[in-house]
Length: 326
Image 1: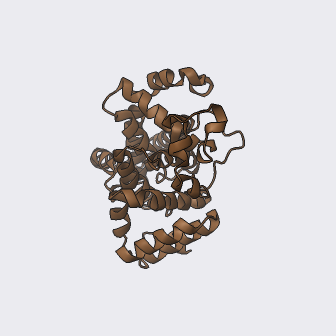
Image 2: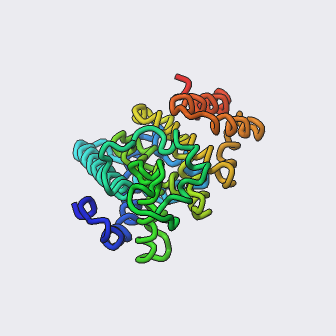
Image 3: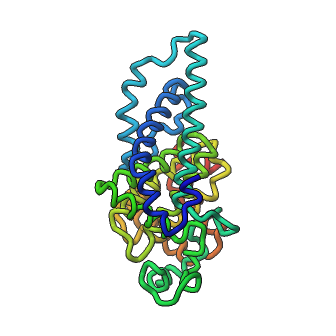
């Protein structure tokens, strides 16, 4: 309630005070909780085990891997009725905490609510012309443009996530409390992991946070470390999220996010190129061709379909992206 109703003038102070320490703590707690859930399930579904994320150099894989040993060593439940009940309760608590925390991350990215503004599909698809033309860099209030209020906002900044503006304000606020950037890294790590944990509600909320991070990384004056993080962690998470059965309702949004990362961050980062070239059927020439095609597509549906075709072809008929071909 405090975060949701905090006036914009005081948002930075309260957001930093309430989330700077909580976000890293919740990341550690939820990561350990989901490792236990997967261990109790026998690891048969392979969802949320960190494999798809760590392949892109994400910190998620290492954090989950560090907790995996003790969880596996415990041997799970002993088969007794009380142990089974405890496991079920623990899973329910972990899922509820995950949903609540992802709702908090969504609130950080969209503190002013949606009010009919665009929240589904790709965060920036359909507004490529404005970004390419420098509208954000020229007209954005962050860039020091003249005028006031909504008249100064670009089309992208009128989206629910404010063109990434809200997430940048939060990053600046928590950095003033914790200069190490732990809260920012933990927020991105939790959101990317939530996409593969196997909870549809949590994934949907986490995608709102991820979409805002991608939008902020696409700004002309974005920090290069943030761009590389988007490529190394967010892109692999979205690719892995496409294979999770519970994400069927979010497939279009995941494809849109992949499209945005490819179009806006591939030309300015090495991490995005490395992740895509790691796909068995992807070549340098093919990647450049897809980038050229996507840069000319204005339709979200057509762009998503082109991304889907690219990923199915790049998967080389393997199991990694089998869900796309079904």
